[in-house]
Length: 210
Image 1 (tube, helix red, strand yellow):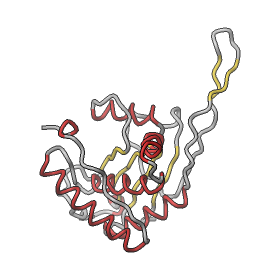
Image 2: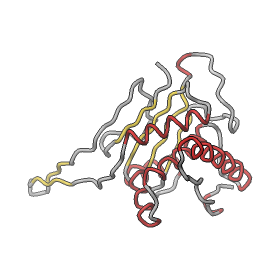
Image 3: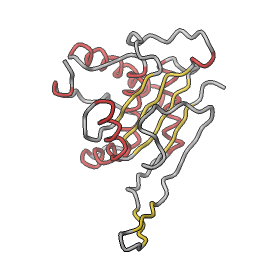
Image 4: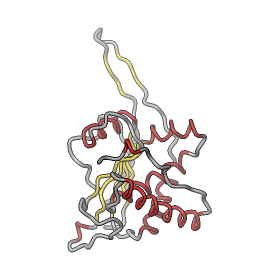
């Protein structure tokens, strides 16, 4: 079955960083339970992860609208929601940046020309890849800017889908091209939903690799 979004919320012990997460054929959500740990004195302690008030149905609905605008309704993609520790670890492993971030994308088609819809030859190729949303990081940013969490998640998801479709921002030219695409996508999203979303603000040249 195609046209599926996989929305997963994971705790640190669930996801293997050493390999990419495959897209499942159905919608999955995993709640993050409390971790139980023993001290050196063998006394049990429970540590709660930070709670993020994520409205999954809202996020999934918004992603469906984004896929329609991008023209990739026939393709599967994975949306994996993670905390700061997990997104930092993945960022460190794959981008050599030991810090949390808002979104990381792992495209199925790594050499795709920006904006080009993949030419599929086999059924299993209806896959765009996986997007990791640093929901804890985004929530912290929203608290500082008084922005709505779910609006911010929709914006970073659009940014992530752009990466799945070949867009990059390693240079000023690439960033401008990607921002133009995001601006168009979000303007269409606003038109269809009555929202008022804006693309990610321009990053400093320190975030662009030469």
